[in-house]
Every structure is written in C-alpha cells, then in structure tokens.
Image 1 (cartoon, rainbow, N blue to C red):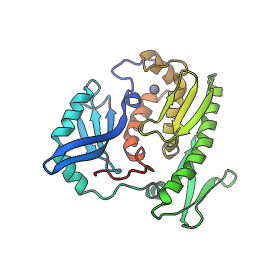
Image 2 (cartoon, helix red, strand yellow):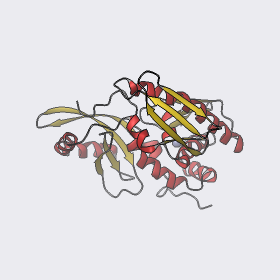
Image 3 (cartoon, rainbow, N blue to C red):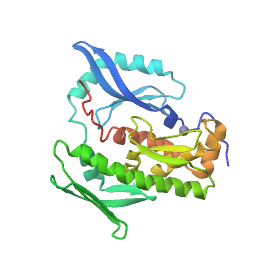
Image 4 (spheres, rainbow, N blue to C red):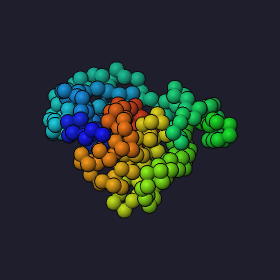
Amino acid sequence: MKKASPATAPRSVPLSGQGTLRLRTETGVISVRCLWKRSVRARHLRLTIDRQNQVVVTLPPRCPVERGFRFVETKAEWVVRHLASRPPPETLAAFLARKRSLTAHGRNIPLLMRANTKNPAFEWKPAAGHIRLAHDDGRHGEAVLVAMLRDWAAEVLAKRTLDFAARHGLRVKRVTVRDQASRWGSCSSKGTVSLNWRLILLPPVIQDYVILHELAHLKVMNHSDRYWLYLQGLDARAAEHDAELSRLASQVMGLGRRERAACV
Ligand SMILES: [Zn+2]
C-alpha cells in the first residue's frame, strides 16, 4: 500500500471544531455559531453558511487558525446580511423527514415517521427491517426525539464498534455514545471509544469510517503518517471518507442542539 504523505493525509477529523464567535458589526456585536474545517483540497480560505445557519470556515492545509479568525472578522457585514436572509435552521425532525433512514450495522434502515404529540415512540423491529418513529413536532418535540435517537445510537454504535474491534483484533475497554459539540468521536489511551450519537445520521460507509478512525487510535494515538497508514489498512478509502465526513459535518453536526439561534 502506498504510504500516506503529509500532503495527502486526511486532516479534517482532528482539526475540525465548532464554537461561538463574536463579531463586531456596524450595528453592534453579534454571536454566531461557527464550524471550523481544514481541507487538504482548499486552496484559499472559504466562508459559507450552512443549513443550520452556522458560519463554516474552511482552512487550507497550512493556514493558521488565527488567519481564519481575522478573515471572518473582515466579512462580518457579509455574515450579518446572509444570516438575516436565511430561513430558520433545519430541525432534526425535518432532516429525518427528508432523509427517511437511519444508519446501523453498516446499512440504511428505512424510517417510517408519523407525528404523534401524545405518545412519541421509537420502535425498531429488526425482523420487519424498518424503524417506526412517532414524534411530537411541537415545541418540546426535538428534545424527546434526540433522547430516543440517542438511546438507539448507544446500542447500535457500541455493537458496531465491538464487532469491528473483534474483526481486527483490537481491544476496546468501553464504548460511550455522547452528545459531543464538535467531534465525531475520540479514543482514550485506556481504550475507551466515545462516539457522537449523530453517527446514526451519516451514510453507512462514513459511520464505519469514524468508528475505524477511532479504533485505529488504539494502535497509534496521534495522527502521524504511521497512523494514516494503519487506518488505510482498515479502510482503504479513508481519505475519501474523511473528506466526505468533513462535507457532511455542516449538515449534521448542528442537528438536535438546544441552542438553535444562530445569531443573537
Ligand atoms: Zn483521530
């Protein structure tokens, strides 16, 4: 296998992040939700606004983050103008209604949704091959929906992780599924793999890539060339999947969060 060179090795997983940014504008100071990404393919700094009304800053491989901050500051008026003209951020329910499937065990599982304010319920019957979801699409519905999806994610993501670990002869001590703000996953030196519940919202190959990415850290804790080489042995298309993950982050990472206001 070809050795991953620093110029082509995927970098977006360790270097992406999410946070709040305060911008000085002509009409005062505003706070905006901001997603930082580093892309090996970006030639210039890029600024966009995603479906969650987050400001997405894409940095070329060697561009210092401070330059990214300064760049956004100079574009504050552009950000204000564009946020004002955007529809409200997409809700988790709207995203699911559009997608109509969840990911587990390496495949898309069809999702049959119906609005039911009184009795929200999540029913997964493996024999039927689909999930039935009754959800409250009212004001408090989103939190209940997140809780139901998180419970299921905890079960299926742990199973997928342990299956992969067994297949590749890796020892995992524990798998936790959490509501991370900006990370898809992490791996501790003690062997605990933590995954973001939103992985069930990603396509199967991308979900598997994140799990394999974290499992590969059981062998190599950093993101050195040796690490990427090992990861490519687990997922031969790791670089391509990493780039796709970076693209999907702006659609998925902001879903199901309590603070939905992009501009306050
Ligand atoms: Zn990593």
